[in-house]
Image 1 (cartoon, one colour):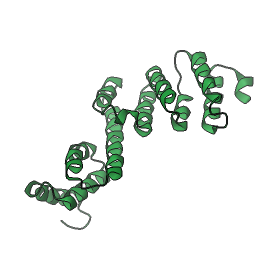
Image 2 (spheres, rainbow, N blue to C red; image 1 turned 90 degrees about the horizontal axis):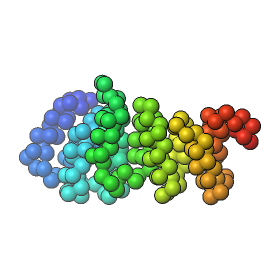
Image 3 (cartoon, helix red, strand yellow; image 1 turned 180 degrees about the vertical axis):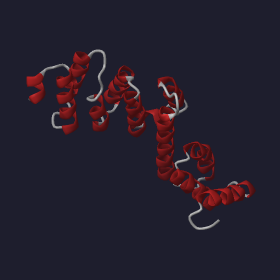
Image 4 (tube, rainbow, N blue to C red; image 1 turned 120 degrees about the vertical axis):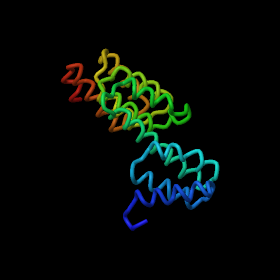
Length: 188
Protein backbone atom coordinates (compact mmCIF):
# COMPACT_ATOMS: atom_id res chain seq x y z
CA UNK A 1 0.00 0.00 0.00
CA UNK A 2 1.15 3.53 -0.74
CA UNK A 3 2.07 5.66 2.28
CA UNK A 4 -1.06 7.50 3.45
CA UNK A 5 -3.38 5.13 1.58
CA UNK A 6 -5.37 3.79 4.51
CA UNK A 7 -7.86 1.98 2.28
CA UNK A 8 -5.06 0.09 0.56
CA UNK A 9 -3.43 -0.62 3.91
CA UNK A 10 -6.67 -2.02 5.31
CA UNK A 11 -7.18 -4.22 2.25
CA UNK A 12 -3.63 -5.54 2.56
CA UNK A 13 -3.96 -6.16 6.29
CA UNK A 14 -7.34 -7.85 5.85
CA UNK A 15 -5.82 -10.19 3.27
CA UNK A 16 -2.94 -10.94 5.64
CA UNK A 17 -5.42 -11.47 8.46
CA UNK A 18 -7.41 -14.00 6.40
CA UNK A 19 -4.21 -15.97 5.77
CA UNK A 20 -2.99 -15.79 9.36
CA UNK A 21 -5.89 -14.78 11.66
CA UNK A 22 -3.93 -14.94 14.91
CA UNK A 23 -0.94 -12.83 13.88
CA UNK A 24 -0.50 -10.24 16.65
CA UNK A 25 1.08 -7.49 14.59
CA UNK A 26 -1.55 -7.73 11.84
CA UNK A 27 -4.33 -7.56 14.45
CA UNK A 28 -2.73 -4.55 16.17
CA UNK A 29 -2.24 -2.72 12.86
CA UNK A 30 -5.83 -3.42 11.78
CA UNK A 31 -7.12 -2.14 15.11
CA UNK A 32 -5.01 1.01 14.76
CA UNK A 33 -6.25 1.67 11.22
CA UNK A 34 -9.91 1.05 12.13
CA UNK A 35 -9.49 3.38 15.09
CA UNK A 36 -7.90 6.05 12.92
CA UNK A 37 -10.64 5.80 10.30
CA UNK A 38 -13.27 5.76 13.06
CA UNK A 39 -14.65 2.52 11.61
CA UNK A 40 -16.25 1.41 14.87
CA UNK A 41 -18.30 -1.51 13.48
CA UNK A 42 -15.11 -3.07 12.06
CA UNK A 43 -13.28 -2.39 15.31
CA UNK A 44 -16.07 -4.01 17.33
CA UNK A 45 -15.92 -7.05 15.03
CA UNK A 46 -12.16 -7.27 15.56
CA UNK A 47 -12.31 -7.07 19.38
CA UNK A 48 -13.08 -10.78 20.02
CA UNK A 49 -10.07 -11.79 17.92
CA UNK A 50 -7.87 -9.26 19.73
CA UNK A 51 -9.06 -10.64 23.06
CA UNK A 52 -8.60 -14.28 22.06
CA UNK A 53 -5.13 -13.80 20.61
CA UNK A 54 -4.00 -11.52 23.47
CA UNK A 55 -2.46 -9.22 20.87
CA UNK A 56 -3.02 -6.27 23.22
CA UNK A 57 -2.54 -5.86 26.94
CA UNK A 58 -5.75 -6.04 28.97
CA UNK A 59 -5.72 -2.31 29.70
CA UNK A 60 -5.23 -1.39 26.03
CA UNK A 61 -7.98 -3.77 25.00
CA UNK A 62 -10.39 -2.33 27.58
CA UNK A 63 -9.67 1.23 26.42
CA UNK A 64 -10.16 0.23 22.78
CA UNK A 65 -13.44 -1.50 23.60
CA UNK A 66 -14.80 1.56 25.42
CA UNK A 67 -13.70 3.80 22.54
CA UNK A 68 -15.36 1.52 19.97
CA UNK A 69 -18.65 1.42 21.88
CA UNK A 70 -18.62 5.19 22.44
CA UNK A 71 -18.19 5.59 18.69
CA UNK A 72 -20.99 3.14 18.01
CA UNK A 73 -23.35 4.99 20.37
CA UNK A 74 -22.55 8.34 18.76
CA UNK A 75 -23.07 6.86 15.31
CA UNK A 76 -26.43 5.39 16.37
CA UNK A 77 -27.56 8.80 17.57
CA UNK A 78 -26.29 10.52 14.40
CA UNK A 79 -27.85 8.13 11.86
CA UNK A 80 -30.38 9.61 9.47
CA UNK A 81 -33.81 9.50 11.05
CA UNK A 82 -32.15 8.69 14.35
CA UNK A 83 -34.25 8.49 17.43
CA UNK A 84 -33.94 7.31 20.98
CA UNK A 85 -34.96 3.78 19.94
CA UNK A 86 -31.95 3.33 17.65
CA UNK A 87 -29.66 4.66 20.39
CA UNK A 88 -31.26 2.32 22.93
CA UNK A 89 -30.85 -0.61 20.54
CA UNK A 90 -27.12 0.12 20.30
CA UNK A 91 -26.93 0.43 24.12
CA UNK A 92 -28.56 -2.99 24.52
CA UNK A 93 -25.69 -4.50 22.52
CA UNK A 94 -23.17 -3.26 25.10
CA UNK A 95 -22.26 -5.84 27.72
CA UNK A 96 -23.64 -5.39 31.23
CA UNK A 97 -20.13 -4.93 32.60
CA UNK A 98 -19.27 -2.19 30.12
CA UNK A 99 -22.54 -0.38 30.83
CA UNK A 100 -21.11 0.41 34.28
CA UNK A 101 -18.11 2.24 32.78
CA UNK A 102 -18.45 5.98 33.48
CA UNK A 103 -17.10 6.89 30.02
CA UNK A 104 -19.77 4.81 28.29
CA UNK A 105 -22.52 5.95 30.65
CA UNK A 106 -21.52 9.52 29.93
CA UNK A 107 -21.56 8.94 26.17
CA UNK A 108 -24.95 7.22 26.25
CA UNK A 109 -26.60 9.71 28.62
CA UNK A 110 -25.10 12.58 26.62
CA UNK A 111 -26.64 11.25 23.43
CA UNK A 112 -29.98 10.77 25.21
CA UNK A 113 -29.79 14.41 26.30
CA UNK A 114 -28.93 15.52 22.77
CA UNK A 115 -31.95 13.63 21.44
CA UNK A 116 -34.25 15.22 24.04
CA UNK A 117 -34.70 12.15 26.26
CA UNK A 118 -33.68 13.95 29.46
CA UNK A 119 -36.01 11.94 31.70
CA UNK A 120 -34.44 8.69 30.56
CA UNK A 121 -30.95 10.14 31.00
CA UNK A 122 -31.86 11.47 34.45
CA UNK A 123 -32.94 8.06 35.72
CA UNK A 124 -29.86 6.38 34.31
CA UNK A 125 -27.46 8.95 35.77
CA UNK A 126 -29.20 9.02 39.16
CA UNK A 127 -28.79 5.26 39.54
CA UNK A 128 -25.20 5.27 38.26
CA UNK A 129 -24.15 8.09 40.59
CA UNK A 130 -25.79 6.33 43.52
CA UNK A 131 -23.70 3.22 42.79
CA UNK A 132 -20.43 5.03 42.09
CA UNK A 133 -20.08 8.80 42.36
CA UNK A 134 -18.45 10.40 39.32
CA UNK A 135 -18.14 14.17 38.85
CA UNK A 136 -18.49 13.94 35.07
CA UNK A 137 -21.84 12.19 35.41
CA UNK A 138 -22.95 14.79 37.97
CA UNK A 139 -22.02 17.60 35.58
CA UNK A 140 -24.26 16.14 32.87
CA UNK A 141 -27.00 15.51 35.45
CA UNK A 142 -27.11 19.26 36.10
CA UNK A 143 -27.69 19.96 32.40
CA UNK A 144 -30.77 17.76 32.11
CA UNK A 145 -34.25 19.25 32.00
CA UNK A 146 -36.40 16.47 33.41
CA UNK A 147 -40.12 16.54 34.13
CA UNK A 148 -39.53 16.99 37.85
CA UNK A 149 -36.77 19.59 38.26
CA UNK A 150 -37.36 20.07 42.01
CA UNK A 151 -36.99 16.34 42.62
CA UNK A 152 -33.85 16.36 40.48
CA UNK A 153 -32.50 19.26 42.58
CA UNK A 154 -33.28 17.41 45.82
CA UNK A 155 -31.45 14.35 44.54
CA UNK A 156 -28.37 16.40 43.71
CA UNK A 157 -28.54 18.18 47.07
CA UNK A 158 -28.35 14.77 48.71
CA UNK A 159 -24.95 14.21 47.10
CA UNK A 160 -23.68 17.46 48.62
CA UNK A 161 -23.29 15.93 52.08
CA UNK A 162 -20.83 13.36 50.71
CA UNK A 163 -19.11 15.64 48.17
CA UNK A 164 -19.26 19.19 49.63
CA UNK A 165 -16.23 20.48 47.69
CA UNK A 166 -16.92 18.95 44.27
CA UNK A 167 -16.95 21.88 41.86
CA UNK A 168 -18.90 19.90 39.25
CA UNK A 169 -21.63 19.15 41.79
CA UNK A 170 -21.80 22.80 42.82
CA UNK A 171 -22.11 23.80 39.16
CA UNK A 172 -24.83 21.19 38.63
CA UNK A 173 -26.70 22.45 41.70
CA UNK A 174 -26.51 26.01 40.39
CA UNK A 175 -27.90 24.95 37.02
CA UNK A 176 -30.68 22.95 38.63
CA UNK A 177 -31.61 25.90 40.86
CA UNK A 178 -31.81 28.11 37.78
CA UNK A 179 -34.08 25.62 36.02
CA UNK A 180 -36.34 25.71 39.10
CA UNK A 181 -36.24 29.56 39.11
CA UNK A 182 -34.57 29.57 42.54
CA UNK A 183 -32.39 32.57 41.75
CA UNK A 184 -31.03 33.26 45.23
CA UNK A 185 -30.28 29.61 45.86
CA UNK A 186 -28.57 29.36 42.47
CA UNK A 187 -26.34 32.30 43.37
CA UNK A 188 -25.40 30.71 46.72
